[in-house]
Length: 197
Image (cartoon, rainbow, N blue to C red):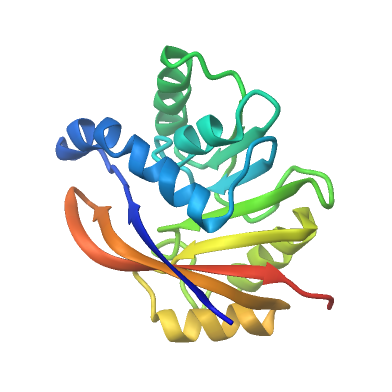
C-alpha cells in the first residue's frame, strides 16, 4: 500500500529568490522530512546536497544524536552550507567533498535515510554511473533504511523502473510545490525501501 504525503521541496541554486525563500521554507522542509519518515537520532546522507536546503532541516530533525552527511562536488556550495549550519549552531552535519563520482566514503549499513533530490541533471538514465550510485546507496543504507528521490530532469517512470530493478520497493510518494531554479513548481518525491537482493 502506498502512502501519499503533502509536501514542499525547496531548492536554491543561488538565483536570489532562494535566499529569501530558503529560510522561510525551512519549517516546511522539516515537516516534509518528518512525513517521509525522518526521525530524531537517524543518520542521513544528502547526496548532491548543494547549499543545504535539505541537509540543514534534516540536521534539525535528527537532532544532536543524529547525523547528516552532506555530499557534493560543489565546494563553494558546501562552504556556504557549513557557514549556514554554524550560524544555526548545528554541529551534526559532516561535510563530504567529492569529485562527482559515485563512491560514497561511508561504511556499509551506516545511514537510515538517503536523499537523492534534483541530481538527475548530472546522473542521466543512460549514464553507467547511475546503477553504480544506486548500488552504493544500497550498500551504505541500513536494512530498514529508505531512499527519497526527487526525479527532476529525467523521465520519472523510467527512473522509477530502474530503481525498482536495483532492489528497492516503493514506499510512498509525496507531491507538492517544489522550488526549483528560483521557481515554484508542482512536483513529486518518491520514497523507496530496501529489499533483500
